[in-house]
Length: 209
Image (cartoon, rainbow, N blue to C red; front, side, top):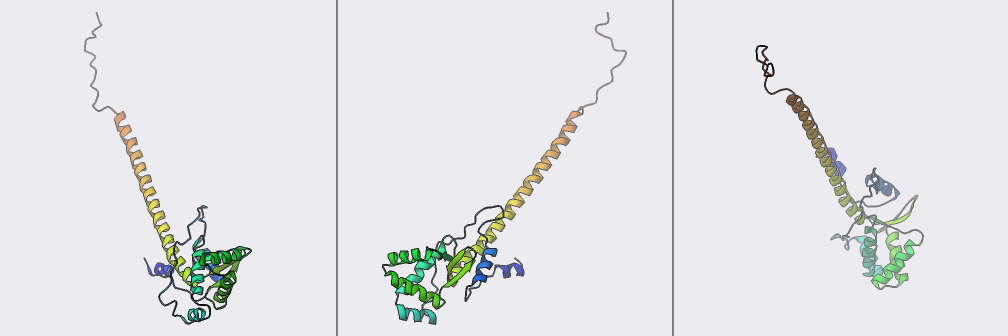
């Protein structure tokens, strides 16, 4: 891997997420291939970094809303995992449904969930982003997880594509070699293996009475 490839594959955690980030991710990690094959972009896990609860921003939120806000963070991160990997839809009725689901899952009052959610957005623990298809809720750690995983997926797809191309080329070359060898053998076999002897005119014809 050359220096350029290493730079392209380098993933750094972002401080903020905006609409430009969404456009960048959609370009780098398309949902569908050029051949129309849908890529799996989802995650099956969330992470909480070891210094997360000690950050000034989160400490203030915990002071104001208690441990419940950490549970709300974890809930929304799990919702971001599928199918997009790092964000979840919050336009139309989606946010209301998520609030209801969060309240039911965590055994919290819906109004309390709404308060925690809004505090997370206002204090930039979560980010709201938009494109022509709608509005989404995103998180920097979830985006970092997404980039790490899908960067590896892209490299693995490229590796497999090169491997398939190499195997196809080798098979084609082998078939051409076999085909060429068969033609040569056919030409050789069409000639007599031994020279035909001369027929002498002096030989008696067995039917010549």
